[in-house]
Amino acid sequence: MDAPYRHIACCIDASEASRRALAEGRKLRALGQARFSLVHVVQYPVPYSIGFTPQPAPAELLPGAEAWLSSVGDEVPEAETVLLQGYPPAEACEWAARQAVDLLICAAHRNLPQRLALGSFAHYLVNHAPCPVLVLRPPVPPG
Image 1: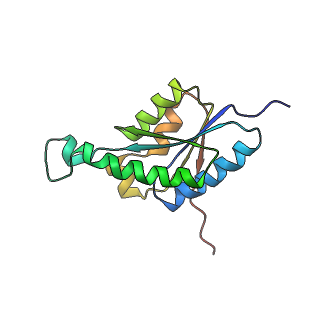
Image 2: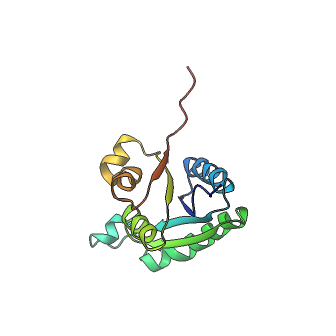
C-alpha cells in the first residue's frame, strides 16, 4: 500500500494547541514514514512593521526562535525543523508550495479578539495553502 502522504508539515508555536497538532502529525507520519517538517514562522512585531521602534528589531528575535525550535526538534527526532520569517500564514503557504508539502497541520486556538486583531492563521491556510490542511480545534470542555 502506498503511503498516504509524502511530506507532512506541522505549523507550530509555543501553545498547548500546537502540541496537540504536533502529536496528530506524528501519528499521521507514522502511517507511511513521510518526510516530516516542523515549521515555525517568526513574525515581526506589529509596531515594528508599521514604523514604531519600542519592539526589538527582527534580527534580535531570531536567536530565541532558533533555540526554541531546536529544542522542540530534539524531542521529535523524525522531523526536520524549518524557521521562516515574515507574515506567518503567507510564509507557511509559500514554503509549503516550494517544498511539495501534501498535508499541512495547524491548530486553531485564538480567541475572537485575537482573530479580529491579528487574523486567523488556520483560516488563511485553509483558503490559501497549496495542499490539504488539517486544523485541530481546541478540545470541547466537559459539561
